[in-house]
Image (cartoon, rainbow, N blue to C red; front, side, top):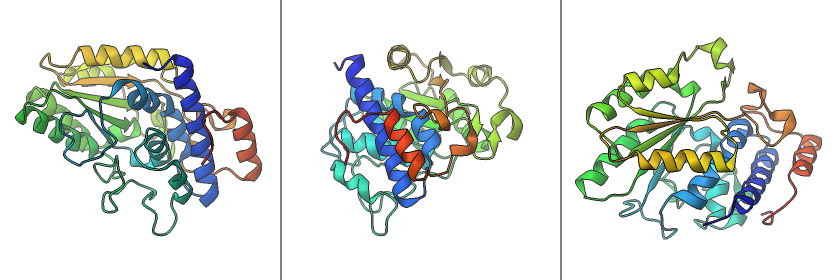
Length: 281
């Protein structure tokens, strides 16, 4: 089991990867990537049971589906540094003929990517299908997915949520990145989400709040609690109260950095805030 410091070091290096990747091509989505960094770090480095000898069927493995596919810089960095493909390949992000496109795709066979994503609202449906396949195959492993809170404005999410509870898909944990920001502004201004916890509970889910969504230990406890609640007849939802742009002070608490690349000076500032820990690509 990795120590908290080891996980923090991993996350710090991932932050460097994210801002460098987006800066290099002047394109991408750093805000949400930084905000979900600690969560995906804990999930891949401490919680999930998986093999880096990647196969699409994922038998006897925990599976993860990224629904908010625009935070691909984070996903690619975590996958590479978890051993799915060479870290050096991060330098090809969003370039022509790269396997690391702006939104994850499956046609180039990038290890770790199980579904093309980025069309918001669809990931929960895909994850539920995978969870039901696990049940049909008597596979006891768990399905995880990650979603943006702005994504909760998509109607398909609530169709899927109703189905998961109605069919007792209880080997599934969906996490909502509850940062209150989306591409056009604060969620409360674009389309207020109301009480998400009450809504998921009304749909028949068990809901866990992780109030410190960028704290390694809090995330570990939240995921452990969620995992302990699987197999009890209900799908599980984690509301991850994260900070957009976490770890880079000028990107935090604002939607402005949802899809904006840092310039040269801003990159240097961001990197100075996050000293190298595992080696750059």
